[in-house]
Each structure stands twice: as C-alpha cells, then as structure tokens.
Image (tube, rainbow, N blue to C red; front, side, top):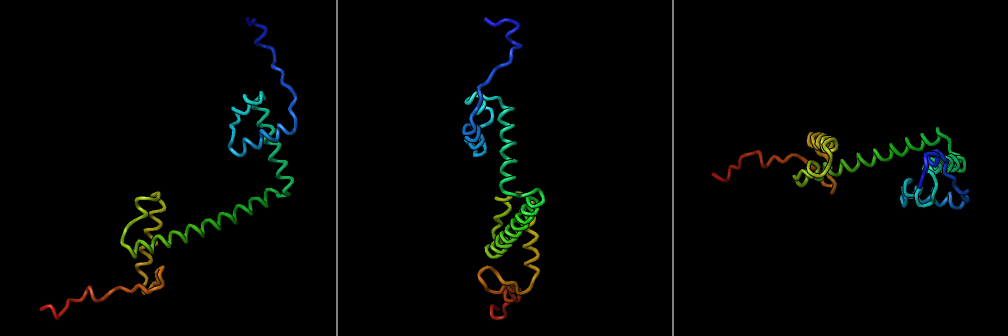
Length: 152
C-alpha cells in the first residue's frame, strides 16, 4: 500500500544504450511508434524521448552539413518545382475539360483549384488557334453558327 511519501519519490530509470536510443528514434520517425507508446514500451519518459529526437535532428543536420539558409533555398526550389507541376496538371485538366465538355475539376478537386482551372479554361477558350493536348488546332467552328441554305 502506498503512503503519502511514495507520491513524492522520483521514479528511477535505467541507463539506455545508444543502440536503443537510435532504435526508438528511428521507429518514431518512421511512424512505427508514437512517442507515448515508445515511452511505455521502453520505460523511458516522453520528455527524454523528445530530447533524443531533438539531438538526433541536430546530429543529422550537422552530418549533412546543411545550414538553415541552404535548407530554405532547397525548400524554395522544391516549391517552385511543385508549382510548375501543379500548373502543368491544371493546363492538362483544363484542356481535357474543353475537349470533352465534362467538368471533372468541380466534383473532384478543392474549390480553389477548381476555380484556377476554370480561369485557365476561360483563357484558353478566348485564344484563337490554341493547340490542344492531341496536337490539333482548336479554332471556333463557323459551320455551326451559319444557317444552311440547302435545307430549304
């Protein structure tokens, strides 16, 4: 039976080997374990595991030799690359919607992206002689707008 003094006693933990620390950090970073579950499984306080994670991230940064400015530059380049890919995909979707006449983006994409695609479609339809994805030239048809004299 616990007494009032037991409540104030600090829990003692065993020293953890480097291999165990790296194993725990690796499992957490790979998503195999949560910090809480690792704490219970390995009998280590969560704060200690968080400390290991911080130490490991700074160790990795030092080993890669990448400073914050280099990391920011790399992330900006990645953002530019992803924006290019997004624009390219939106162009393809807009072109396919113009060709097929089916609004795919309204039902399957977030509203903000669907609006961007709608603007691209409007810009493309305004252009005369735009080239579609198949390589043929899209020009407004004049046959449909003119009445046919032979039908009378």
